[in-house]
Image 1 (cartoon, helix red, strand yellow):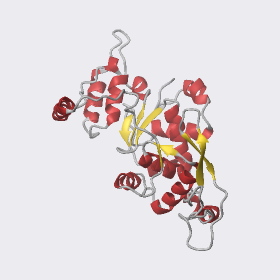
Image 2: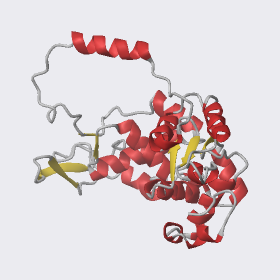
Image 3: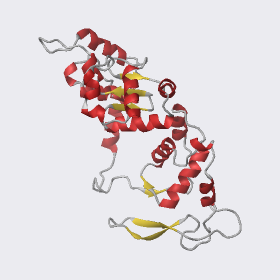
Length: 288
C-alpha cells in the first residue's frame, strides 16, 4: 500500500482497499488524514467528529469501524477513545535505504507520544506488531499487581476441575437484569442515551429468542451500539410492535410463565432449546 497521509495512486488500486464500500473508504481516509492523527497510527479522537467532518451517519460510522476492524485496517479501544491504524507507521516512519533501520528521530517521537496515551492497551499491541522498529518505550508492567496475583495463585487451593469444565457457562438473561454502572460509564463515554428504552428492547428480544451469553453487560452494550430496538431512529421510544409484544404473553401460562418462550427439548450439544410461546395475555397487568 502506498503512503497514508500523503496519497499515491497505489492506495486506490490496493486490492484490500477496493473491497471496501464507498462509505468505508471515506471512513478509512478520514482515519489516516484527520487533524487528530499521529504518524504512529495510534491516537486519541472524538467519535462525534467523524460524522461532523465526513457527513456520514453515526450508524454508518459504527458499522464501517466494525468492518475496518474485522479486515485488520484498524483497532479501536472505546474505553480510551483511541484508534490504531495498524500499517500507518510502516509507511510514515522513514527507513534507511542502506541499513534498513527506521528513523531514530521518529521512533523517539513515537515513544514520547506514547507517554501521553495513559498506558492504553493498544500501545502494547503496537509494540508487539512492530518488533523490528525498536521503539524506545517499555509498556509499563505493574509489578505490585503481578506479585499479588502470584501470591493469590499460591494460596488458592488445588482445583479438581478440568480446564474445560472451568470455563464460564452461558446463561439466559437474569430476571433482575438492569443497567449496571459498567454499562452507564461505557454509554457516557460513547455518547449513548435512552438506556432504559434500550434495556426494555434488549430484554424483550433476549427473552423471546432465548439468547444465552456469558457476559450480559457486554451483550447489552453491543445491542445498544447496534440499536436492536431502533431507539435512535424512533425518537428514543420503543417501536409500537415491541410495545405490543411486551403485552402478549400470559403470566399464568404453564409453558412459558409469561416469558414468551419455553423449553422444547435439547440441542445436539445437550444445551436447552427454546421456542416462542403462542399464549395470549389474559385481562390484567402486562407480563414483563
